[in-house]
Each structure stands twice: as structure tokens, then as C-alpha cells.
Length: 127
Image (cartoon, rainbow, N blue to C red; front, top):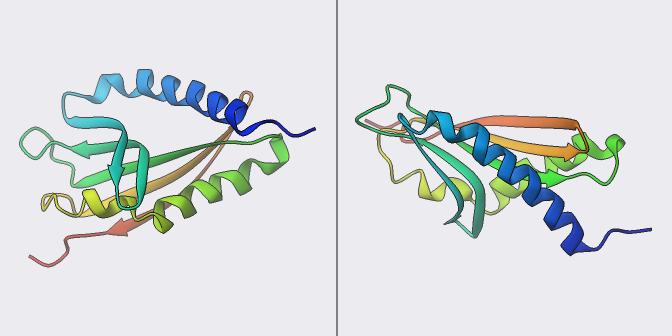
């Protein structure tokens, strides 16, 4: 039995709201935005260091995926990372000259289990 795309999207949104709550505490030094347009799509979550209030030079992109079963968690997390790259979500961040790298995270959820894959992309390296 296959879950409808709408049901999977709803399950992803539950985790999305969880992450919104968890990330609320870092907003003093970072701009945290959700579903922002960048490249050829919408980033689930973008965490951008504030140039004047944060010493960090690394931004973070998060793409959430819902796995239909625990054994596909890693595969779904990889799909999230691949989506970040394929849709060029880093495009909006490249305009921010104080950002020197982007931590790209594909995060997959299944019930209480989670898998995360990551890659760091250097940007704005010419001074």
C-alpha cells in the first residue's frame, strides 16, 4: 500500500514544525527562514549567520524528507542532499559575502528515527 503524496507532505510538515521550534533559540545570531525561494525551488530551512551579530561564517541549508519505512532512512536523507544541490539552493546565500561555507543537510525522518547526510560547500573564497 502506497501513501498518497499529500499524506507524506503532511508528515514532512510535522517534522518541519518541530525544527522551527528547536531552532527558535538561535535567532539572536542567525536569521532562520523556512520555505524561502532560492535557485530552482524552496529551501525547507535556511540558517544564515547575521553579519553584525555572529562570528560564524557558515550558513546551513536543511532539506527534510519522510521515509516510508526505517530501512529507507539513509536513502531518503541522500535524496534531500541531492535536492539541495540539484535545485541550487545555495544561490541565495552566495550573495552574502560574509558567508564562506554552507553546511548542506539532507534529513530523513521515520517515526522516531532520523538519518542525516551532509556536505560542506565553500563559497565566496575570493577576497
